[in-house]
Amino acid sequence: MAVSPAATEPQTVPPGTDVAIAVHHLNKAFYDSQSGRVTVAVQDVGFTVRRGEFVCIVGPSGCGKTTVLRILAGLEDKLDGEVVLATVTQPAMVFQEASVLPWLSVQDNITFPLQLKGTPKAAREARARELLALTGLTDFASALPHQLSGGMKQRVAVARALVDDRDILLMDEPFGALDEQTRLQLQQELLRIWEASRKTVVFITHSVDEALTLADRVLVMSPRPGRIIADLAIDFERPRDVVALRRDKRFWDLTYEVWRLLTTQPGDAA
Image (cartoon, rainbow, N blue to C red; front, side):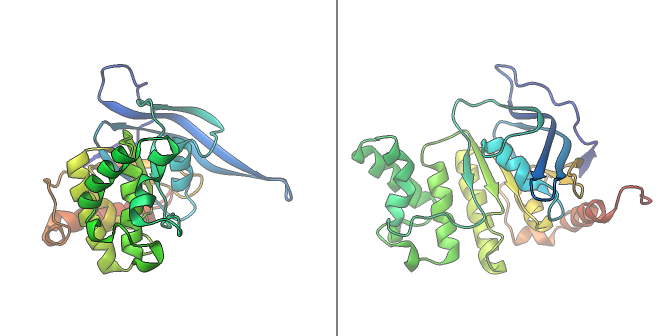
């Protein structure tokens, strides 16, 4: 385990480096027109993510984790600061609730972004076959969403996020609504898919053990206004087995360290 100070001066993404995401002094606030109150969501957030790196962000509810992710995705405007993405394509995003289209089959849900781009049918079908196999959905290509479990719907959402081969994948608590057994199964599936694709991933979660299972690094955020208070390197060897990992004493030492950070308030004794 390695713990470094929170990043406050990440470098701009220059050509030819391995940095995929750089966030500088990011601030975001929300204005309530009825009460006239301003709520600062995140304050002076800064971090970098290398190409092909899997980074998880954890923090208490309401600390601004999802706000940061939505700014990276271009779904929210920042108040000030800088976000630099080393990609020419918009990041792909997977939401907490499986956003599948109920009237389309699994295959058509997966290839829907390609259809919007006008990709020829033969190319869409070839790409669908690859992703159906990768996500274990080949036998369900013709199924409709109401015939799927919650976990299978999230597999569809992940496959659709991968379909047009974007460089950066943003995931907002995608397994948060699932039961523990399904969550562990999908963590293992996601690790397998990531090993095959090596996308740059930023993954939001409330679950400390999920973050430690998946990530190369875990960023810990403070209560609102959210700041990065720790950057932890997770150096478990890959590929990882999500069950076997829980037999490793280092896993529980890291779990304790993250919970200590999450429950230590500013001004508390270390």
